Image (cartoon, rainbow, N blue to C red; front, side, top):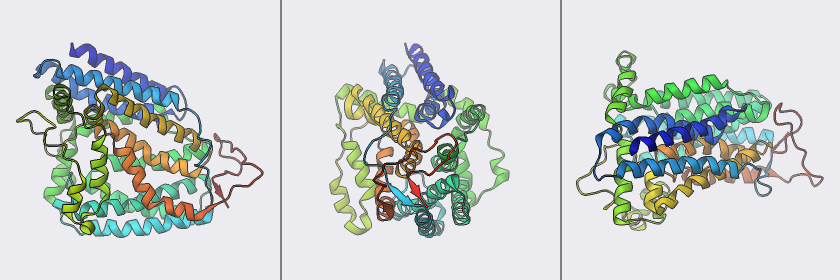
Length: 432
């Protein structure tokens, strides 16, 4: 029974990707990018699970069925949200001030990148950071905020300050991405460069290149752990050792043996279903406390007291997830709301669609939220559904105050709609 459901998931993923391929710029939308995650990350791990006949009977089928529902809801959420937000996101910001804000955030974030570089490699490269690394990781996000602002300014009207800021940010980020092998951060940086030019000038990468990128990413994803292991052991990038990584064989091994992420999802979903052990969204509260309550200030005991103990009974007795592996967003969505958890994927896609169509009208706040949110929406598939909301809480703390201070009142005569495709005319979001 598992194979028909795997084929269903394949067809739904193909439908999602097809939504992005039928029109220009669709490769930057949630259906294409999330569909790529279902296709390239989840599906290659499933054939082995179907052939291994895991106990109890029906556990794999339940996970694949629910994953298909989540993929469907991702597509339906986007279709339901294809219209701009009318109120609340129309900030008018002086262009020069915005560039200086980006420069300030870049310098502040660079300081914490430097602080991270001084930490021992075992702490800096840990896939499950804690303590001071969590605090530094939060604050160094200001560098990425600076990059996004600089790229939006460059795409609209290049200036020496914006170009210099972007080059500085990319140099700092490049070191981290190469040393740490951070897939999510690399994707975020790439989209932060490409999407602004689509918003303001109508430039888009060829769809063939996007498909090739999805294929390369799907094959190479399973070699990331080996890459990080080499860097951790050597304390630097050893290209000779890295060149020996058998990327194709690692991918084939996943096809033959399965992957830990989908196995975790199968076990977690099965345990929640059989025991009716649902947390009704408390998982999201725990992630917020873990990410945003600083134990260095309030104390570890107080921070722990704020969290709800949900993880003692997440799996059947004796099952232990591989260290550093994820559960996928499908697992926490099911563990929260049973099959109704697929509506979380609908909600995330709906929010992203509203932001995207508002951003296409030229509004800077929606553009920033979409660029940061698109990678988080992809990681919802591979990691957990809290990712998008955690990112927006981060931006609310690090970036929103600066934008609100710099905003100007829009003209009372009404705003002029920009020409989105060619980027002509004065844009309402940034004024010079």
